[in-house]
Length: 343
Image (cartoon, rainbow, N blue to C red; front, top):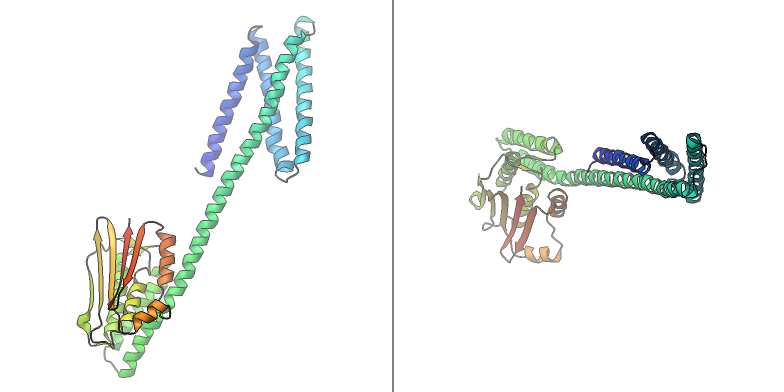
């Protein structure tokens, strides 16, 4: 429930309580006359409303909220006593003006015992109202702080991921320029698209899947420049809904990691196999890569770490919470990740 909704709810309940209390006093005194009953109802309800308002507008902000509980309790007793004295005086004066007799004790004390109890209830209700509003406000502030913390963490994680892309892309351009490759201008244009994606598109919380696919395709194109084993690289996204919204930079680190561990530019039997498709309202992303001899032991020992994988795992927890499944398996010849995202 939002703060505004809570305020409206409390206001409606408050009006209903005062109306019921007014009717209660009216019914209590209606046996004498309607005018007297209305007078008593307005007198007693008005005094309790005054106690309620003083507590809500003055005592709570001045004493209760500042942890001056002793002053709060003292003022509660003083205000309740003053309210009872004033109400008693008006009640006796009105009664005496009607029949010139002091009311009988049983007719006098019962309303004021009720009045004393209800004054205490008025204090309790106004204090409870304050505590409820304060709790609701605290919850909203905590949620806001959590949201700001998540956004801050996501921005930080993006800045950690971005340099990996830039480093690999610039390395490839450098190799091309050094060897005098005539297709260098075309690759520079592709790099420009990649940088645009990293610097601008990734500012959004989500992007369409086709942009992530384009980036992966461009990245693969750069990787293919480093090896003659182009037939050992496959990227199949024919069954993917390219309008699907995903967090930017989410899939690429897994592809980077696959090329890093496969050593495909050195190993003729190395491979990278990537599948991206939709199935039963789920986005499935599978990346398989070969593992050269000696690399598996480094991975198991923790000396060979995946590029940005821990960052991606953290982002998945922050963005998708329980709406994702990530499985990483490996054996002596193959490393495989399977990522499933649900809408």
